[in-house]
Length: 410
Length: 158
Ligand SMILES: Cc1ncc(COP(=O)(O)O)c(C=O)c1O
Image (cartoon, rainbow over all chains, first blue to last red; front, side, top):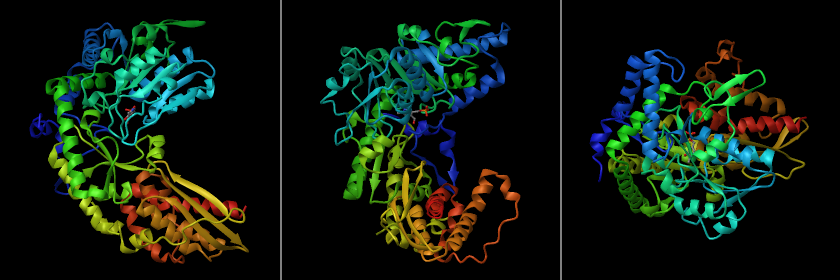
């Protein structure tokens, strides 16, 4: 293993918790990750010693809070290799980031009947906003299909992109764990004259992120899946595109002037940050980035390749035909988010049985109902691993599955 | 944590394994209502024929977890052949059995109201689902088919 997981686990106080005398086996990080002490402390310390409003007041406390808040923005910029600080917009989460692009860029740049390309493995956050806009713009939504092993089927990509205005695609599936070939996709989009919007919500917590190398035009992610607090997310966009877009939400902070007959917008990134931002959460996100930087995202990725490989092989060896693992087997093209079907037992029942031994997995459609229809199942069970999970967690999962076999042995 | 034996009682697993009244009925004469649990994606269809104030036939189709499927199966067996009035009272009695906890969890003021007396309603096998209230997330699974039946009854008697 490339990470000292036993040591990392100790950084996450909740993982020390026992329920009914049994340790917690947290395998739901694709849903939301746990928080290290370093993040908890940074947020507490900030509120204890330095909390103040940002960007509004002249006194020292506020100026200092603003500095720390903007410092968090710089950390994000470095972490995703954005070329400019102004391109980093704080939002509530990835959902708000995607809605901002789709509503603002979409309203200004799309016309009746324009085509937009999505994939069949998108999260609802990258589907529903398009449906909402489509009610107004009558968009033609085109869908990149999937291969049998849950990768994008790019056979007809060029036809799909032909004449399209935007390609909105996930960098990693929250259900299948599949990593998509982002650079290839953004290159194809650019060649076709379409902008590319990348949903990086599952990618950023588990991989080295370089938005410039990815060739994206917009990029969205959430703090809560990457060891940071909930309540803050990021929209990154190319400066010229963000400059040309109308604001999404109106209110304080996003204006340079307001009159009885109108308003002028503020400079980037304030233009897209209406209202009081998530201040303490930004400090927490900054601390999460420091934490991940210290562990090293390349180490996180290598560790997750190892643990994904171990888990998939182990589950198949142990359960044979009784288990169906969705998504690719090859760890080069997948992360450690593993959805499966087990012995025809409903995922709800599986997660219920697993909960008896504190094995936390998600059962359901994972906000990807179109994908569920393609997999021809209403729900899957999903175990998702992170830097604080190791083989013992995978083994606990397998042992708990045996328990489900015992109850539903028919 | 309550034990799984409170949830997965043998009789529940039996109904899950061999669901009663599974299938569809031709509409019309039957009425069909659809229910789904947006949380987990479970879907259910209740087909109902009501004639002369009686539930003449009921069939269930769809898919879901052991709790939603067994609850639907037991429900179909319980209401078939009953009068519409009896079926409605059974729905109320079952909901009451499930929602005591649901309401308490939601902190709803209905809590303070005098509970209705359903001691005259014989729930039979359905009593096995009583343990579900100890698992609040699963209450919606158990009540899915009943809410759908209510809808179907409404349409059939409109
Ligand atoms: C791929 C993907 N996109 C978008 C989102 C939305 O993230 P959030 O709920 O934090 O806005 C998620 C979260 O589950 C996700 O997995």
